[in-house]
Amino acid sequence: MSGRVVYIASNTFREAVRDRVLYNLIAFALLMSGAAILVGQISIGIERLVVINLGLTAVSLFGIVIAIFIGIGLVSKEIDKRTLYTVLSRPVQRWEFIVGKFFGLAGTLVVNALFMALGVFAALFYVSRHFQASDSWVLVALYFIILQFLIITSLALLFSSFSSPLLSAVFAFALFVIGTFAEDLRGFAGLTQGIVRWLATGAAYIVPNFSALNVISSVAHEQPVARQLILSNTVYALVYASMALCGAVLIFERRNLK
Amino acid sequence: MKGGQFSPAAMTAIDILGLEKTYSVGFWRKKPKCALKPLHLSVEEGEIFGFLGPNGAGKTTTLKMLMGLVYPTAGSAKILGMEINDPHMKAQIGFLPEQPYFYDYLTACELLNYYGQLSGVAPKDRERKVREVLERVGLPDVMRVQLRKFSKGMLQRVGIAQAILHDPRIVFFDEPMSGLDPMGRREVRDLMEELKHEGKTVFFSTHILSDAEALCDRVAIIHLGELRSVGAVADLTSSVEGKIELIWHGNKIPAAMKALGADCHVTGDTIRAVLLEGNQDAALEALRREQLRIISLIPVRTSLEEYFVRKLQPSRAAAGVTQ
Image 1 (cartoon, rainbow over the protein chains, first blue to last red):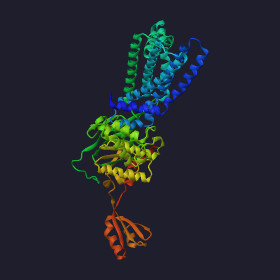
Image 2 (image 1 turned 90 degrees about the vertical axis):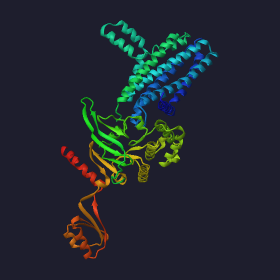
Image 3 (image 1 turned 90 degrees about the horizontal axis):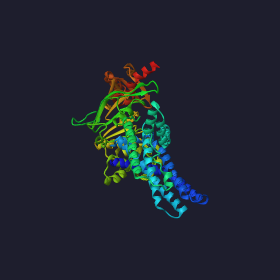
Image 4 (image 1 turned 180 degrees about the vertical axis):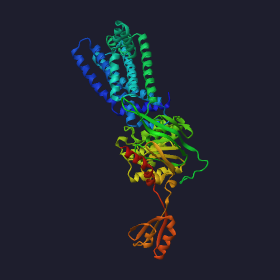
């Protein structure tokens, strides 16, 4: 990787940290502490299930919100504030800028998710006083959540490279919601015929398949995750994010920075 | 170098060959709007070149095209003999945008360190260069202060620091005096002269003509996207219509001077007269006859401002007619 990509990524990470993005961890810590104490009192025998479900869903939602709301401003904010002018007038290629921004935000989200994972395990230990072998699947669910972050960050960057922050947020959030029901969309496509079938099938394969990346419920029920799924999800997320990133680079390369 | 006398060995630093920019404006029915008509211009290495024009003339568009921020509709440009998007070329230039804004969560030191990394400054030299450049622009005491606490003038100084941090061969400044107080403007002028003495080329856009007149070897005047004039400041401000200015001690205008058609003004105990160069000897003889003490006799030179206004007038008049 180019050194300049690393410098831009580090600066993006530093910006997120100094803009107090990681303050969401405080809200998360309060949520997990409250949930662990409350669950311990009201649920009998399903404490672990509730804590894993609640904890991982919170990790996912907090991260998605950060990915969208920071991601949509990564390019447009630099253009609006003209900070980009002093970067691109140096020996920095436009693709290096986009890729650096992507890794900077992805790094922020990974660090954020790891801190939150510590919180989830702490709550889990609090309610059951021990860890068990099936808890390792929580890490797989967490890994899939991070793969979701990579996809949504690349999409936010893609929209940010040609659209206003508001529209970018709408597009990215809409794709997240539709992607969550991607399997249902594929099922619907199978029930239709003619042109509708073509359109529904096309849409089902274009939107990111977040439903395949969501194993929170099965992990909470102590069901293992197939190795095949880990591999296919990894390949899928990396290919999808790379394609969205390529799209962002192609658009940004042609853009006049007025 | 001043006055347009360049050494034959001087290399072309910037070569603009018909650079042109047309934007499409409007939401539904897009109409072309010409921001810059084909521009041909070359700047020699080591000179201070002023790019003058009123607001909206096309100065910033030209600079953005040279920096690779905006793509030209037609034409091309070379900087130090290299294409404008060549990273090797970009490592050798510095750029200060108009009204610069920087990452305000960084300190001045962190920002310059970041820009040093992007410009390829060696890690062992980076800290020293950052310290030196901040001292040079007068900000050594606020190195560790976040930029969000900086005034507009201080940000302008940081902007100049980032443009010269990596010791570039050519420095592009877009309105460098904007936002600076008189002392700050003086310091920037001195800095630009220092850069010239170090052998660097300075290309700067401005609409403050006194700055250009004081600093530039050559200037180009641009208006409504069109190059109106280019040349050495001394040539552009040369004698006007063969007139001379004569100043002498006294408070009464001799009748002979009026007869020669002199335009006289009395200020305190001195009189200033502007008259045709051909009447010079007769005027001097008249003053000697009256035993008046002559203070100076110089050819009248137009100021850059007068020249600038003259160059802009036809189009402004035309714009008035169309309105």
